[in-house]
Length: 277
Image (tube, rainbow, N blue to C red; front, side, top):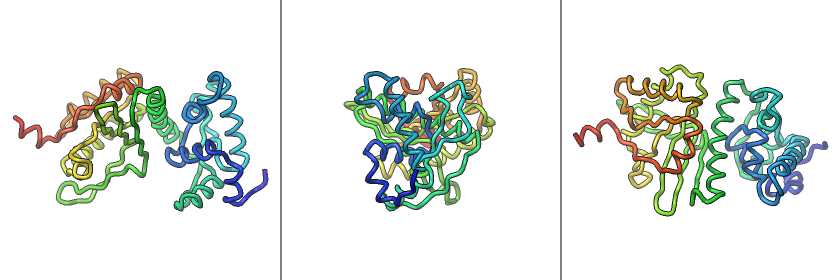
């Protein structure tokens, strides 16, 4: 297809096209199926028709180099729409930079571990979007990396950055919950998990988030691929020194959405727990 300047190209796109680009800008990677579930749901007779429409639209966007299909496929060729992974391409990045006055980014083929992890985090976002769409959540706000990074002063006044995989604020009719999600593919050593859990502990003690959100601190939810992995992570958190293990909830991927819909419990720090004793 011919190369067009960003503003001319924008005139050829519909609102759904732009939403797809913004999703890939925010969440970095998504499969065809995830993009269909997120953006191609209204006005289609069934999910198969919606998927075919999504595939045609994504090929059209790729033809303009707005998005790019990765060589690596999740689960192999036989997975079809669940395996094809997309990211923003050079023209899409240039277009959004013009429309939103954003800085340009560099897009390359990511490594396998990054792809699998990022697609897993995107799946969490898609499930929450679907829950809101069917009325299970009254409100939903999602913030992905790096926009959700939290700067704070840790021990001895040292500057630190907490980097959650996904930050979400969910609301039912009566309650609002703040969450920080960590997606675990099962490949990280347990020591890596406990080190990040300790960053969460120092983040909670700093009080920065609470001051900005009326005293509310997000619940920390670790999402893992299996019951075996859940037991391993829970044991590692219990065994870690200087860690308030019970403020970190560990659930399987199947338990993720029911847990969120049930609502969070407020996170506490070691100092707060000791003051109650």
